[in-house]
Amino acid sequence: MTITTDSLRWIKSSYSENGGVCVEWAPAYASATGVVPVRDSKQSTGPVLMVSAAAFAGLVDFARGAEL
Image (cartoon, rainbow, N blue to C red; front, side, top):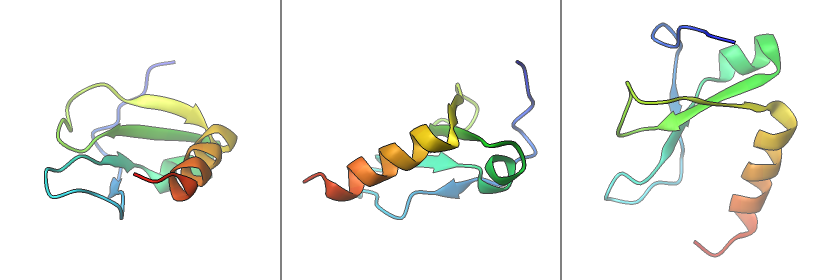
Protein backbone atom coordinates (compact mmCIF):
# COMPACT_ATOMS: atom_id res chain seq x y z
CA MET A 1 0.00 0.00 0.00
CA THR A 2 1.29 3.45 -0.87
CA ILE A 3 -0.07 6.55 0.82
CA THR A 4 0.98 10.17 0.81
CA THR A 5 1.87 11.25 4.33
CA ASP A 6 2.70 14.89 3.52
CA SER A 7 -0.77 16.15 4.42
CA LEU A 8 -1.13 14.21 7.68
CA ARG A 9 -1.23 16.04 11.00
CA TRP A 10 1.65 14.64 13.03
CA ILE A 11 1.85 14.62 16.84
CA LYS A 12 5.23 14.40 18.57
CA SER A 13 5.65 12.00 21.46
CA SER A 14 5.20 13.68 24.83
CA TYR A 15 8.30 11.86 26.08
CA SER A 16 11.37 13.18 24.34
CA GLU A 17 14.95 13.89 25.28
CA ASN A 18 16.70 17.20 24.69
CA GLY A 19 18.54 15.56 21.79
CA GLY A 20 15.28 15.16 19.93
CA VAL A 21 15.14 11.38 20.25
CA CYS A 22 11.42 10.90 19.72
CA VAL A 23 8.76 9.72 17.33
CA GLU A 24 5.68 11.24 15.75
CA TRP A 25 2.39 9.61 14.85
CA ALA A 26 -0.70 10.65 12.91
CA PRO A 27 -3.77 10.08 15.12
CA ALA A 28 -6.46 11.20 12.63
CA TYR A 29 -5.23 8.72 10.02
CA ALA A 30 -5.07 6.04 12.71
CA SER A 31 -8.66 6.73 13.81
CA ALA A 32 -9.94 6.59 10.25
CA THR A 33 -8.06 3.46 9.16
CA GLY A 34 -6.93 1.46 12.20
CA VAL A 35 -3.36 1.79 10.91
CA VAL A 36 -0.94 4.06 12.78
CA PRO A 37 1.74 5.92 10.80
CA VAL A 38 4.90 6.39 12.90
CA ARG A 39 8.07 8.27 11.92
CA ASP A 40 11.27 9.75 13.32
CA SER A 41 10.58 13.34 14.33
CA LYS A 42 14.00 14.44 13.07
CA GLN A 43 13.39 13.04 9.58
CA SER A 44 9.96 14.24 8.55
CA THR A 45 10.61 13.26 4.94
CA GLY A 46 12.05 9.88 5.89
CA PRO A 47 10.36 6.50 5.96
CA VAL A 48 7.04 5.96 7.74
CA LEU A 49 6.34 2.77 9.65
CA MET A 50 2.71 1.67 9.35
CA VAL A 51 1.58 -0.49 12.29
CA SER A 52 -1.76 -1.82 13.44
CA ALA A 53 -3.54 0.04 16.21
CA ALA A 54 -3.07 -3.01 18.46
CA ALA A 55 0.68 -3.09 17.81
CA PHE A 56 0.97 0.64 18.49
CA ALA A 57 -0.98 0.28 21.75
CA GLY A 58 1.41 -2.50 22.78
CA LEU A 59 4.40 -0.29 22.00
CA VAL A 60 2.96 2.56 24.07
CA ASP A 61 2.24 0.21 26.99
CA PHE A 62 5.78 -1.15 26.82
CA ALA A 63 7.31 2.34 26.71
CA ARG A 64 5.24 3.48 29.69
CA GLY A 65 6.48 0.54 31.76
CA ALA A 66 10.12 0.66 30.66
CA GLU A 67 12.87 2.49 32.48
CA LEU A 68 14.11 4.66 29.64
